[in-house]
Amino acid sequence: MQIEVEGLRKHYGDFAACTEVSFRIGQGNLIGLLGPSGGGKTTILRLLAGLEVPDAGEIRFDGRRINEVPPQKRGIGFVFQNYALFRHMTVYDNIAFGLSIRKAGKADIRRRVEQLLALTGLQGLERRYPHELSGGQRQRVAFARALAPEPRLLLLDEPFAAIDAKVRKELRSWLKEMISRVGVTTIFVTHDQDEAVEVADEIIIIHQGRLEQIGTPMEIYNRPASPFVAKFIGESSLIGNPSAFRSFAGIAEGAQAIVRPEFIEVGSERELSTPSAAEPGVVKQLFFRGSSWLVEVEAGGQTLFAYRSLESAPLTAGQEVLVLIHRLYLYAGGQMQTIENQGKYDPMPVHI
Image 1 (cartoon, rainbow, N blue to C red):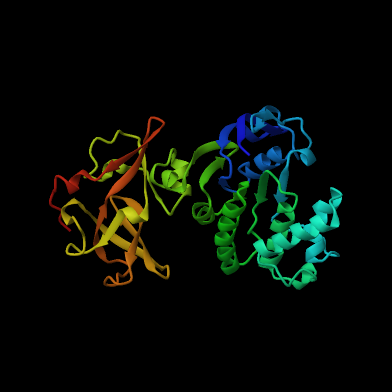
Image 2: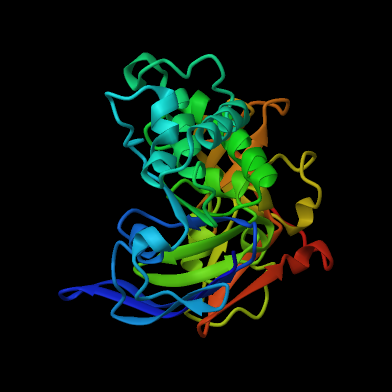
């Protein structure tokens, strides 16, 4: 199913939950609807499902306007973050429920349920009840139940929120593979950027009811359309006075910039790739991240965060270092642009 949303608006009193949101989703794509809590993601999902009625705008499925079409006739499967399984029903009966409501034949129900048990890795568990399953298994049952009637669109509202971190990572890979095999257009709501980047074919970023950006994870990460996107995706530092860094020439007064940790080198002169383009700085704090250190450093009157390999010589708080910023996302005049450290091409000496 192809989805088109145009000029979608939804208000609750004076609160604008969704304002002039427009996007298109291609057949079979797995889309992450990403943003902070309270930003309007679930409202958009409920509008697509027909559980809410938009104040304005159009929703089209395969070119057909469905604003007035009731939820049960939209061909949608819905998975809730709390599973919403029937506690008194077995795994088999939970998965079969939607087919039973549609008066499908017993043989057809059995064939479809067995197919989904195999697809979701639940064989052998069909006679168990929800309380006898792990969180990951319950979520798989919820997926299977939603897929049973063969929906044209699958909507997932924070599907991994109630699952512990280890199982959540396993289910991410499983979901991506499953959707690829089934081929159903899928939209999942999340506030977890890592989840969206890892799983989604495309990401729609929603903030305060507005669409900030839509694109592939790589497009959004490498070319953020706004300061909010640049800050929200990845671990970034906001620089209120980027003109303080002498290697970035021509920055207008009042401009702001954002820099990602991977764009920064911190260390001694012999450790940096282009020490002549670096700034003097002081280490403030270090945070162990398992595979690397996250270094909080002050340079040019700004607080920055950078990654440092565990293989490098250890740093200590208060230590004087050089800080080499390779790239900034500059925000000025309502536009985002990427600017490179010119000092790397026109080296200037630095003294600390």
